[in-house]
Length: 365
Ligand SMILES: Cc1cc2nc3c(=O)[nH]c(=O)nc-3n(C[C@H](O)[C@H](O)[C@H](O)COP(=O)(O)O)c2cc1C
Image (tube, rainbow, N blue to C red; front, side, top):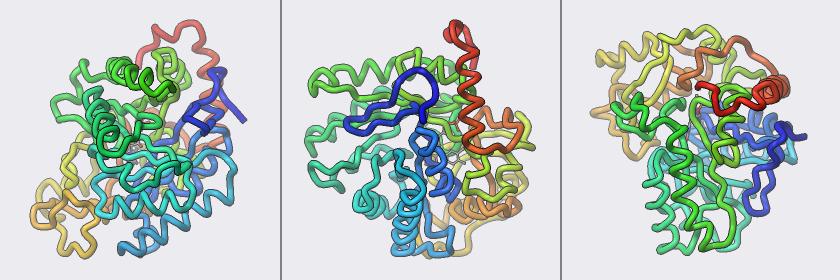
């Protein structure tokens, strides 16, 4: 099964027939259900490792590991396609999550929300799992590559460049988010340029995957045309039958209007894009302060100064309890109109991709 006539995403010996990566979505939004469905359509399905134990009320270090292991195995039972795990650098159990994913034979690990400088430290030489940092600038990719090379003799297998229209945590300062200089269209060629000398040194392609605000088949064509080897999409995959979140979370996407989507300051220490609801208004007023923090799931978060517990808020939302949480969403999320099977979504994207043939450069975001 392969969509779009672009050819596969090739990451060393990992061949992904459809050049679409489904972005990892925490907490619990992209697990085995969504990831396997995407992989079965030839794309790269990605599970989110973030506090995954909370999905089954086991948010202990051991509970998270056990839950991640279970999710990877369940996904593998449902698909022979390409599977990845998204692990946020800020997670306190980052290293254990990486090790567990490698043990379970995951095809690729994506690591972002911070610079994953020590990621290669957790994998043995010659292991088949690929490593891909998620960056927001050419400078970040240069820093990571230099560090990995000097400390671990490792070159990134692929790179995701995530622009400011993405959902979830954003690797930009607040004032950069709407600055045209930081548009994904500008970042993709800069990252490709930064990677080129490295590709020449190692004699192999390092695919660049474009993410953030890619919504239609025409968008996919545009970024492939710009030189990306694949695109990463998350928001559009939320409104699918197979997405692992509760139906109320998906419906919040269908119901949301452009003016409902805003930028928040996350306790993780980065800005984030979300559907701004009553919970977030109350949190801003200081009435949602966490009473306890038994698990310290985010290394950069402190209970005393945190306006709310982000893990509780995200897991509540994922389970449909949006009064006690909130949903992350990409800038184009208000364009979601219906919840469809993953297969139908790919067919729609394919149709949009074909219809956009010939005028890719002129399309607007
Ligand atoms: C609900 C939601 C949760 C997300 N959670 C994570 C996460 O846990 N880790 C991460 O690196 N990115 C996360 N992201 C970002 C996506 O993986 C993706 O790169 C980005 O949203 C792409 O932009 P798009 O949503 O416009 O397609 C999340 C995005 C959404 C919408």
